[in-house]
Structures are given as structure tokens and as C-alpha cells.
Image (cartoon, rainbow, N blue to C red; front, top):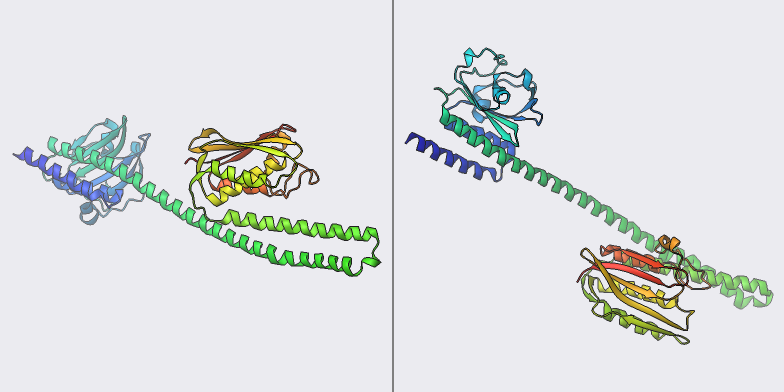
Length: 420
């Protein structure tokens, strides 16, 4: 009956420890394990050390509640000990097995106890092994009678259980710490981004008002000179005024494009499933109405679908198709294709291909820089903002954009979006 009762008590202790593990730290769990080991073995002292992976050092993790409050007043100057300098309480590491000292006073290799330490009469030491290495020591001491095999079984069972639960708890605590750190970083980044957006808004306001006002003033003065003082101006002066007005008009267009780019990159994404085939066909039909002296054959692949913000992705297709129509202007008959390519992970790949002027592939890295242009304005007008806009929108969707082409061989612009 005694053996059955001890097994029942051990089972109940295991259940209590499992319940206690929820909501408590691994350190609290280890101390509670020592308390259970003390109670089941009739001991009055309990301690737990971790053994480092080289098995040359041990570190004190905790004492039992009773040891700390009633039995032992010694406060160790250090919690880290070299095994070759420690006393008999590391015999289980040296011998790589559980050890019982029922006559502590007679041990020849004991090294004495620090001031305030409870006197030791007898002790039981249990190693915890994992993967062939000893990782921890659980010890209890000062049972009123000799320690027996049942005490060893209880201590071993609780030591192993405590180690496994504590290891899991430590992993959970580390994960919670990392999550908290990540959340703090995300909050900081979000605050930094909000601050940057506010600065961008302030800059956009300045561009819209502070820069446009003097431009309008210059344009107005040019107009006054042309209308009221034309008789006093020779042809060269009138040409200079014309160029000045052309420059101010172009600068106004660039400012408007910058403001548009700023708004697009700050707009909140509202994503849904998109029918890119229908969207591209509608845009192509609108562009075709602007053609008078040439023909562009547009082919749009069927069932091109993705997820994205419909307003922003429409801007992407407008820019890419407008470029395709523009850079085929020197061909009386040209072809533009919209289709799909091989997927990249969870992203679907699409392309817009033309047979127009193309570009030098060695300069492809400049294509998506703002205000960068690979063709002369006299050949193909533009501001150099469209492809920069495309890139920023695609990046906001988690995709990539790139281009292939050659001089006189046309160009193909690829972009990836989340799959539908």
C-alpha cells in the first residue's frame, strides 16, 4: 500500500506542477518543483543547479521555499561554480548517476559549508540528462531517515518533468520577449513613418503653394511683356520670353506630377480581386481614341487576375500602356501585348510588351528613378515620373517591377502582384 500511495502522490504532484506551469514563469515552476520534491521525500532542503554544456561549470537556479526562508541563511557570493572545485553535491555529475549520501559527516571529500548554511545530515542528488549530456542537478537533503530507492524515483521523475516544462516555458518566455520587442519596434517604425508622412505632406504643401506662386508670377510677367511691350522687343527677346514661359509651364507640370506621386504613395491600400484583362482593355481603348495617323494593335491575354488596390493598379496600367503607345509612335503599325508570366512564389507576374524604340539594357537601372529619361524630350515627350510611380505602387503591394529590352527591339515591363 505504501508504494501505491507514493505513486499516487507522485501522480498528483505531476498534475499540480502541470497546472502551476500555466501562468507562472519557468523560475517559479522550478522552485515549486523543489517544494514538491521536498514534501514527497520528507526532506527539509532542496536546490536546483543547471549544468553548462561542457559539464565543467554549474549555476545555481533556485532553492526551495523552505530552504530559503527557514533552513539556510547563506547568501552565495556567486551563483556560478566550477565542478572540479565544488563539493560532494556534484558527485552525481562526476559519477554520471544519481547519488545518495546517507552519512554526510563521514564523506572524506566534503569541502565544508559556508557560514549560515544549514547543516547537512544526508542528501540525495539526481542528474538530468539530455542527449548524453547532464543538463541539471536536483538535490534534496536532511530527511529524518535514510533516503531509499523510492525517494530516488520520485526525485528523478520530478527533476525530468521540471526540466522539460521549464525548457518549454523558457522558450515561450523568450518568444514573448521577442514579440514584445518586435511590437515595440513596429510601433516605433510606425511612429517614424507617420512623422515622415507628415513631413512629406508639409513638403507637398510647400511645393504646391510656395513654389507655384513665384512660377505664376514669372509666367504673368512674361505675358505682360509679350502683350504690352511687344513693339519694343525684337525677335530674340520675344523668343526668350517664349522659352521662359515654356520652362515655367514644364516646371508646373513636374510639380503637379510630384504632388500626384506623393498622394499615390500615401494612399491607404484597399485590396480586392482585380480583372486586369478588362482593366487593360478599357485603358487601351481609351488610348486608341487619341491616335490619328497610325494603328496600334493591342492584345490582352484572357483571365489576368491578381489582388490589389483597383485605383492604384489602374495607375500602373495607364502608365505602362501609355508608354507602350508613346514609344511605338514612329511605327505606322505597332503591336502591344499584355499577358502573364511564370509565378514567383505567391506572386503572379504580368507584363506589358511593345515593339517600339526600346532602350539600352545597360541603363535599365535608371528607368525607375524619378525624372530619369533614356530618350530625348524632342523624340519622346515626358516627365520621367511615370515609371517611378509604377515602381512605388508595385512595391507597396509587396511586388517587384523590372524591364527587358534593346535599342529598336521594343521593351517589356514586368510586374508582380499578390495572386488572386
